[in-house]
Length: 345
Image (spheres, rainbow, N blue to C red):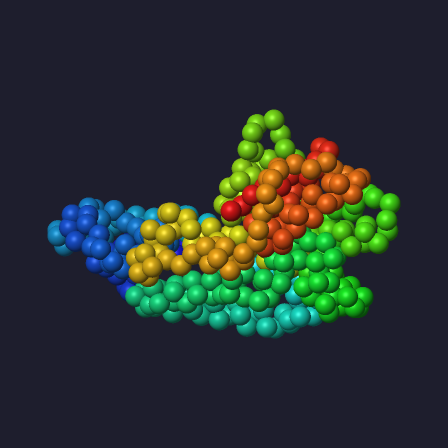
């Protein structure tokens, strides 16, 4: 769409006459977008528009449509761009570890470019192709994808849980392979006397919200160097910068899962999606129904850190089922003396 931004529609359609339909298909004078029209779909999904009053005024006088084409960033495109940054990092890491080849990545890129050219040649194919994209995004989330679910479960759990739920990880070679592949690292190591308990309750994570600084202004925090509203962040809302520092496969895919959850829940995105699908799915709601995890009778929000007593470890142990599913988020405060337990649902 960048090929049209800031240019006169008359110049754009001189080389690509089919693009006129993209900007004005299903509209009527002086500036009305018909419900479900192609131009409305492109405007809502991709931010493509022209000044319809100018367009129809010039057309009725038999003049060329010398009105500026505008492409503005929609909420939907912001999510898509953000997802693409993180997924590109997953692909780069997969290439480094030999899971896929550069040739396979190039083939995928060529297929994507080919699909974009097909849409430009036939603008009315966009809705169907976008539905295909939505299905792929849905298929990446924890409720529908067993690999994402596995990674999500590993994101903040102790070795004890890993061994119980995934017995193959008891093999040292399997555990080391997954550490290297997904980027698992020690996150919280209890400082108690018994070495066996230390080993069992050492919590692993990815480079996914590994550290958080809580400033004086309530609700706002620094998540791995990005200033965000912590509650919105863990709902999958976009941070101020899309270039989050996560580079591991595990960290990126955990964040991708959250972003897709919010993508389908976002009010503005949902309005746009309803132009091409009758009912917007809610993968987050689906996961909440699937992932039944009880909360302790007494809800707390903080624990002493570092963990130096069996009492504190026992309290944390009661929250581990909810942390495992993501119902509660466990956050280590980088500059403080506590762990934060944030309830997500």
